[in-house]
Image 1 (spheres, rainbow over the protein chains, first blue to last red):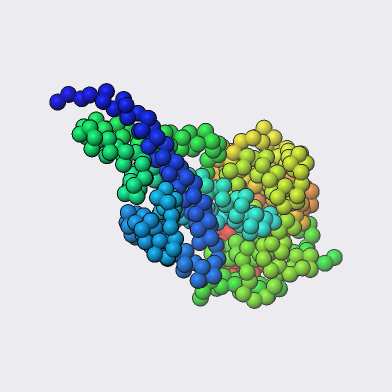
Image 2 (image 1 turned 120 degrees about the horizontal axis):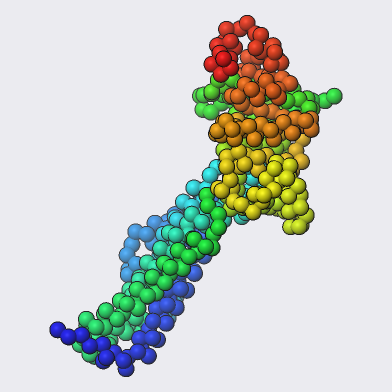
Length: 220
Length: 239
């Protein structure tokens, strides 16, 4: 068997465009998921009226206990039944961010609850209000605790974008399959696609490690 | 002179476990009160009721005539030093003092840092200003915690076993810092197991047992007491 990647050269612009789509969906979904998870995680750490806590719990459990693929199908094909028609990319970003947001909100909540009780007591004794303690003392410490896990979800999310190919979005996986159909060289094309995913996710891991080492100077 | 702190028939239980039983006491200005007693006697709970970290079940505590309802109601006026320091790990030494001054006292950053630098100097930590708490020794951390509590200009300082988690030579540094407060005639309440600290500082000693006041008097009276329970306790920690 001989490997020849040269046949891929004409497809480089197509692959680059697909990589941009993957990156766009991955990054925007992560940013939204982060917003969702901080909001839900913070709310569920506090004292909420039971109904609000219950509803947020329902959201988290539904998205954690059903397949992402079904969630994407539901959002793209199911929601039009209620008159909500979304473009494939919008449906993909909403699906991915709600799905990861559910998992990540539990990370945020756990990080907040792992901040030592003594931190609250010391701050209250000095005169911090509840809100000030949360903003100035608890959140920065929770951020440090949550960061490695949240960045891990970011790499997972980039890989999960391959699922949105089912919504006929011209992202890496779908474009790869199209090139395969035309060239019938699965080995070369899928190794190339895999390498592009690897570069993306490994870069995220490197950035994450850099933030942990250099960006945060304090240790607990 | 009105007492600085008035503790009026306070009781406190956790579930069916009674911690404090009907304790009444007045603490006057400039008094240095040492609170001693066996583990589980309610010493920590007692001072945590004074600063509102614990809510009393019945009775009341007042500071300067104002009833303590929560830690917020006396925040700043009652300084607290914890056994585990409870420094803010994400702030440098100087910011552990300056940040609360900015947030709570609404001081400008430069004014807060100026005041923090003075306080660091007073606990001999000027050279550690830009270090994070995790890089400081236990003794240095506790001195920083004392300086942070002092930054709010409290009327009284509470110490909850301030040297219990320190090696003896580090405990000595904290001892010296408390000494400077005593020389400035600050009102202090010290929960401690270290009898040398009681002997050296206390103008009054409170012996708590089973949630009640078993003895209230001077150190000399305590060591001269004939009561077998006091003698037995002293034999263990002050042979």
